[in-house]
Image 1 (cartoon, helix red, strand yellow):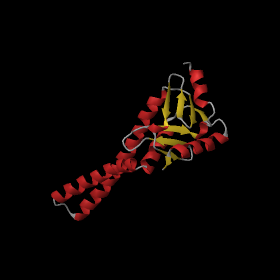
Image 2 (cartoon, rainbow, N blue to C red):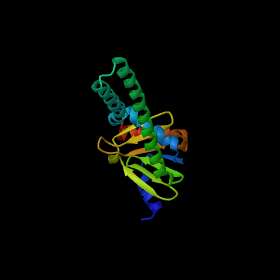
Image 3 (cartoon, rainbow, N blue to C red):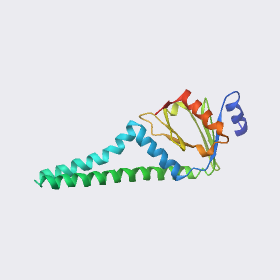
Image 4 (cartoon, helix red, strand yellow):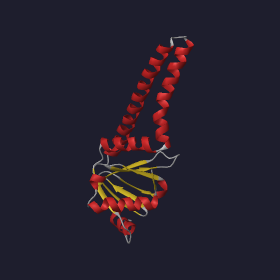
Length: 181
């Protein structure tokens, strides 16, 4: 089947929203931050490194019988180091995701009741709603998230809307098919 014929069959008789954009690092960094703040898995990933750092620091201080003030200061410094590491981890994840999507070049994503279809300069893909379970909306993005065992994440920058109504249409389609977090 030809790509144009597939597109016609996919969108025939359905409401859709079209977004044309070039993926940026900032898009993926915003998506990773939204995932970290709004999902249980993201919050756990963010908290794990600081908690482990504090536990190791306090455990070491207590086992060496250091003064309580030294242990407390070390715990605070450990917390800071753990938070810094978690933030660096999110930036690294965003960098890897952007690196994978940058090869697409300029993207055209059409979203309808069946799912999403993205066509880039070098490749394309489709995803039905079974792949995603939730979505988050930020001031600049729609972030589609996979379930608890799925590690999928898709980003739709609002700047790519072809007309202002596409943002509202997309929000309606997402509300009917996914749960907002």
